[in-house]
Amino acid sequence: MKYVSYVLFFLLSCMLTQSPLHSQNLLKKLKDKAEDKVVNKVFGEDNSGTSTGTSSGTAASSGTQTGQGRMQNTSGGGLVSTPPDVKKNLAAASSAFKSGNYGEARYSARQALLGVEMEMGKKVLASLPQKVDGLDADPSQDRVTSTGIGFVGLAMERTYRSDAKELHILVNNDALMLSSVNLYLNAGYVSTDEPGKKVIQFQNYKALLSYDDASGYTLNVPFGQSSMFSVQGINYSSEDAFMAAAGQFDIEKIKKGLGEK
Image 1 (cartoon, rainbow, N blue to C red):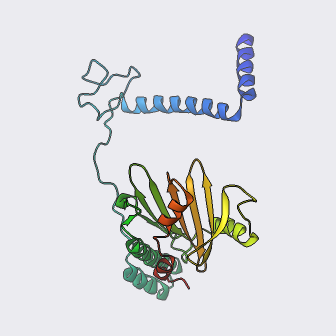
Image 2 (image 1 turned 120 degrees about the vertical axis):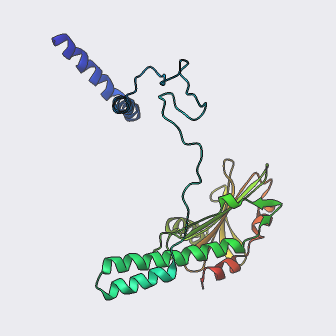
Image 3 (image 1 turned 90 degrees about the vertical axis):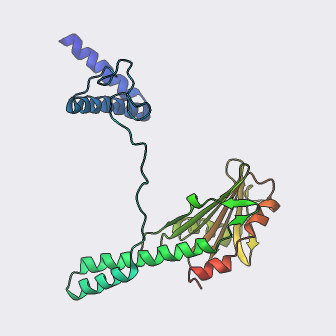
């Protein structure tokens, strides 16, 4: 018994002297093994790696079942993304407010605002060009997201790409990103102060242009009261080539679509 205690003490000491990440990984592995045992017990599966009715350890339908005999999903269209109905939620908010159900009134009002923002974001994306610098827009990458709280957190994304190059567009109200960009713009930093960053003029707006070998060129342009237009170009051969592509977007048109002044 004393020998076992010494062994346990030694193992615990080793664990404590390892890095936190290593210890977490070890604990996670132990936890995963324990969970696997529980799952196997509940579903009546053993640990041999074979499934009922097979002798080679593979399922009858190749590619659709795991080693434990549980089927994997191989089809389905995901969830339907439908913006909230603005008129319906406004009516619900009014009704809930009149009846004194302020929690429901607040929820419905936020849903109505979310619906307005989603519709606005879709129209802004629709106003962007379908082809830029020979790159086609990828419709599957179009994104409009919003928190539904007073246009804070509204974001619209589009990606243009070819086999060799990519251009990613982001229009959003990210207070943190806006603050970091304004730090450079307001302080008047120039390229000689920090290599890879410089302040430029873009369509009558002060903007921050950045470059690094990993992510390519990035242009951030604050506009309106709290919005920012961002472009990232990957595999562009030069600053001039990237800026020519970025210049094909009209910030005033985007600003008008967002109702910014």
